[in-house]
Length: 149
Image (cartoon, rainbow, N blue to C red; front, side):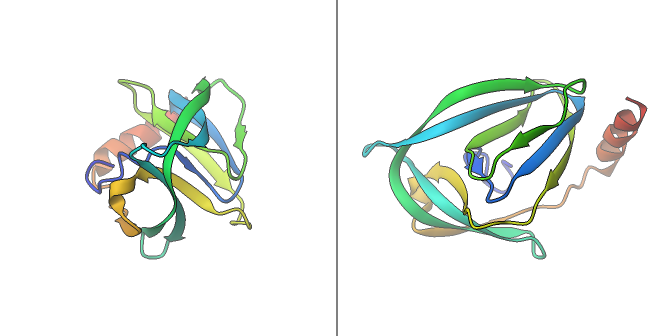
């Protein structure tokens, strides 16, 4: 995420329901509420993704917002699959010092727009390019460990 500059865009909401299950490692997840705060350096952007090209376009929707965590969870391989509702602001990160492999299933996008909270300095519109995973030995090792778990 640091390579493509999206590390400051962790808090987001999908326009579809998402089911997930941790297969390996641990995942820290936080859910958020958003409020108006005129002096905040953050803004809410709508997201349109083009999966064929591996990019997403952000369009400024609301300047001066603040986010506050209202739930924090640690997801583990022994946990049941869980649902993140469409439109729910959240951030999911591998637990500190841990790799994570998760299985994710989504439905097709509905009428709820996808959203990301990001610095206002991005301006009115910007694009994010998604890079390819290039560390194939690491990915293979993670998948092998998940298969044995």
